[in-house]
Length: 196
Image 1 (cartoon, rainbow, N blue to C red):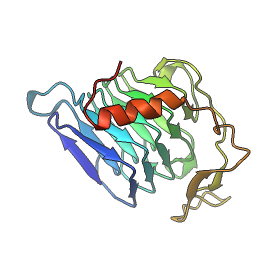
Image 2: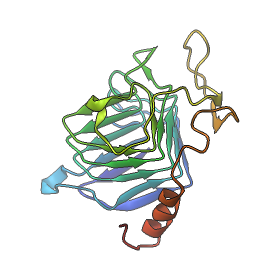
Image 3: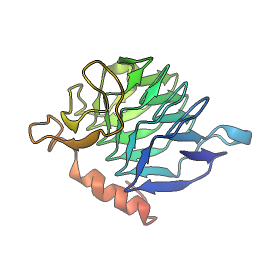
Image 4: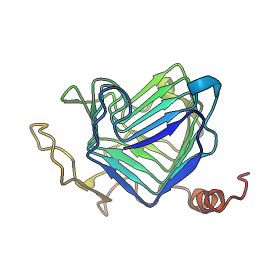
């Protein structure tokens, strides 16, 4: 879908990244901050974006290799992989705010939405399937609860479907659980101002 290679910088905003396939890592987004001697892709922002129905062997939705990217207001769901179906982090220190990683399929089963391969992601105000300390640093207000999407990306028998609707049901536990200043912070980053 999208490749940030060799410490490349950029912004993905207000987008849907859907139905991409990679043979290796990162079906939807691959951020490689450790390529050709670079040590981080600190200037990558993923903002207000849905990453859904992508496939890869590792990191079906998003694969991070050593970068410190920023994720704000994103949903990763309905992606498929053999490990880290929603998000696989390899040695990176990304910051994930107001982010939902839920309902991704690992080898045809629910679970293992996020796999942290030795890095240190920083999570705040996020809803993450299987949330616990192994997934990264806890900045507070994270949870592990079904976000109650309007339509999941799989049927009751776990058959994937491409018509998932990842807007939140009114009774979703994720409604009004994000932190609004992160939204403003995301816009400040997009226009090139520094975050606090």
